Length: 194
Image (cartoon, rainbow, N blue to C red):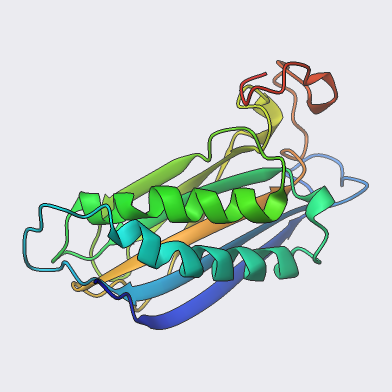
């Protein structure tokens, strides 16, 4: 059974007051929780990877709990999310795909009624690589005000035999959002799309 020993965990937070226009009444909050773990599949091809998703579920829950705490512990204010992975150079992109179920499952479990797909990005990258983790609304994929990305990375990872897994959450849409489309107040279908 694979193991993913953690070398490092970091939580990044942002309060965005404006994007060049007038200051918002309430700043937009974003946070990302990252874990750098040993990649048990580095340097070799393994046909059957899916069982390892189960091993990553506790990591997903731990990172989710750290994110919620970083956003003041009020899940009612969290309305955006996303996930990502950077696989070290001795691994393959499919090792990053291991995060799809554990990362999405964890945020959905803690946030309750989240219906929309959790946006995701992954890549194989060198030491110190960065990743734009996409963000979207938790209940309706077509809410344009919540389309965003949070750039993450750590200066000392992932090493070639590591994976950097990330979860991200946000409170509110982009500051000065003016692109129209479905507004949060107009979500009606509750099917994850609209």
